[in-house]
Length: 107
Image (tube, rainbow, N blue to C red; front, top):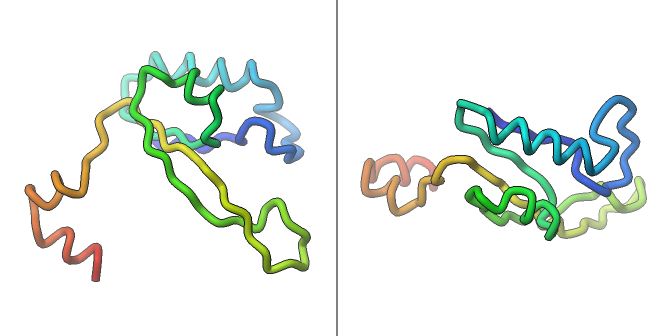
């Protein structure tokens, strides 16, 4: 399951949900009880790292125009985390299992 909730402190106006830090804590509590594999995405901030410290974390970066003027082509660097309740596969492990898979991904 992929969970992409509103990120904490991003100042977007979400009308119905995830407006407080307590909402993020409540979601983390529900994920602790989940019986399926999940991936959760959020900002790479100390509070999120602490909230999910028992899980696997993969730092990722992306460029976004979300926090710039609407008529601008500027981009800002977003530092985010993908958090999983299972050990993520490494590229080496995938290559060992099926070398052709890596070739098709890179092509």
